[in-house]
Image (cartoon, rainbow, N blue to C red; front, top):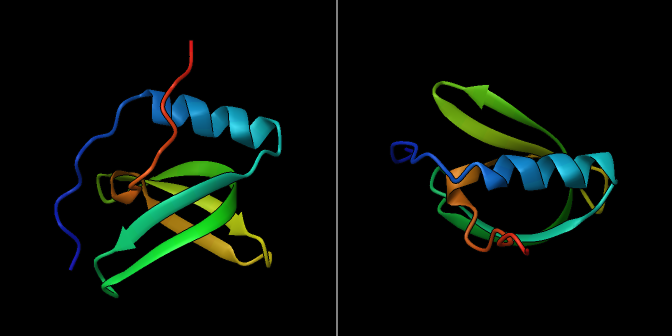
Length: 82
């Protein structure tokens, strides 16, 4: 069972959009409460999707497999640099 969604800072969406447009990879660490697994992988963002009141990163892995990650479960999202 997933905990209630906690809204994320808007820069998450901006950063994912830039990575999508530039075909840039992101090294992310996230937790999946459904499987009780934590993951650390390089992914290539494709889009942000909204579903059931939560925002999800839709990406592909290094092997080309589809990955969906709930944004509030990403543990190491890159912070903005000014």
